[in-house]
Image 1: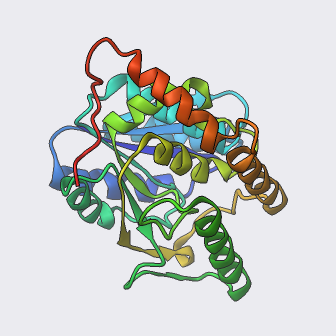
Image 2: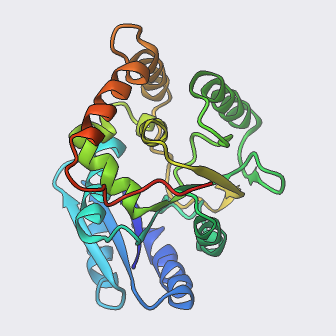
Length: 275
């Protein structure tokens, strides 16, 4: 089974275009798939649009009565998928503003088949890039990703801030079992959750790979949801949480992970893929 996870906030214009494209792409790849949309308290016609699309697409809708932000929306999407997926299933998380295209699905799945646990679409791999992004925004994005590479050093990862990724369901299920509600701990700090998931999966020993990707900002059909000041604050908090010398994530979770794995009376359902 393949699950596509979409966080949505005020996407009434994007969804009628994107969901049929995703549906068509999935039909060509597999007979078993679900599209999961978390409607995060949208104030436009997103809820009505989703109800109409549900009549013709294999669509699961999760509604928030109020806008809770990307962190809680991502948490709900991944927890729903973890409850319904088997370890061998695949989860693809993407934005639903039409800047991420389903034409990358085959590349993501091909990399997962090589034994990786997380595959990221990357603007910073040869052949990748971005269209329609201002020079200022492109500079900020490149600087932020370099900052993350220096401070967090997730193996084989150059692209930290793009949420368009494919995951083995097994590694997500284990992350939720181990971290619980703290798999996405910094829920109220905007887009910080996108990087936090990478860090938490790194701590579990996940294997990462990237595929070249072109971000099509020129196709974006809704306004940006990022609040720069909140995201910048979130990045700072993330660094403190990870590097804090007195029980920060980098050191504190190592001990807890050893205890967690030693306490398992049976072999874990997820085993890290061999190199």
